[in-house]
Length: 332
Image (cartoon, rainbow, N blue to C red; front, side, top):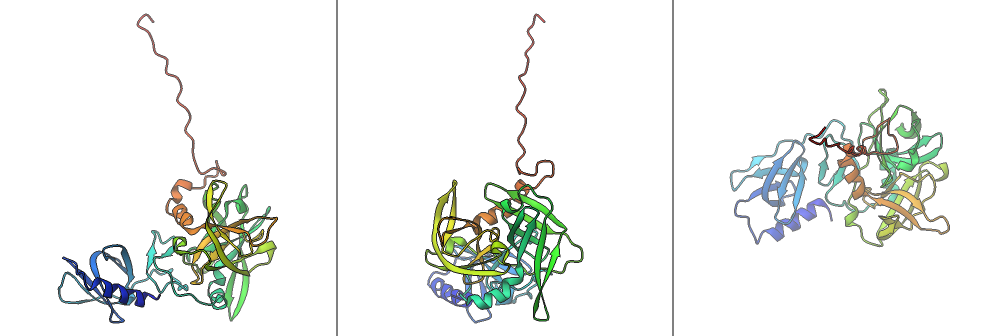
């Protein structure tokens, strides 16, 4: 269901139960949303509709009626300078300061894999170290990217290979000024950043919602299995709650091989729903991905997992145990 169809349906359902103190967002497609206005941002408006909170992009709003007052024209949308359209930017988005990643509240309509790969291909990268290689993907235009912790574990010499589209062709560019920002070895995640001053703005991918997935939904992966860059594999979601090593993973029939680690698992809206990280070696079609909700949690609390050169393999600092206090007696 598109955002416009959702808005029209929501307006119809809410029409029979008006709010006591209601604000109305008149949308450009002549639909309307009624609720309590919580916040206004340069690029979006936050509206409480009773059972959920919607973040409505400014470009979809024709006017705002506050508590029955005269309609006021909505200010023009002001997207961030680094914003580069992605397949799911047409739905409500949430910017996480300082715009580290973009996440959808609603799933966009399904599209064919071929057209999606053409749009999101530039955002998927190869991550190389002296010990091997893996995959990754950009979160924003400033060069922040996600990969697996085991891809960079014990390594500080990291390079990222990016495919920039120029004149209809994809040109490989290798960036060697890569900084480790945060790591979480327990969930096998790492946040990196390309710090090359001459790098252009990077194409990035929107994070989806793995909670909205259903078993049997089509999914596909893009990565570099066995070093074969930009390989696309497709399958279905086999289960959402496969427990392995104390964590829950998405299980998929999508082919996952060494080199796919750290790459994105997409739904058919082109949104990341997981990060591929392992497979069962003695079976086929038994791949696994870290749910994107864990990725968001890692990014939202990245300061707790900040990488430190003096303690590179552990994001936690353990305090020294207190020494036993010697109590002096009155006779001393």
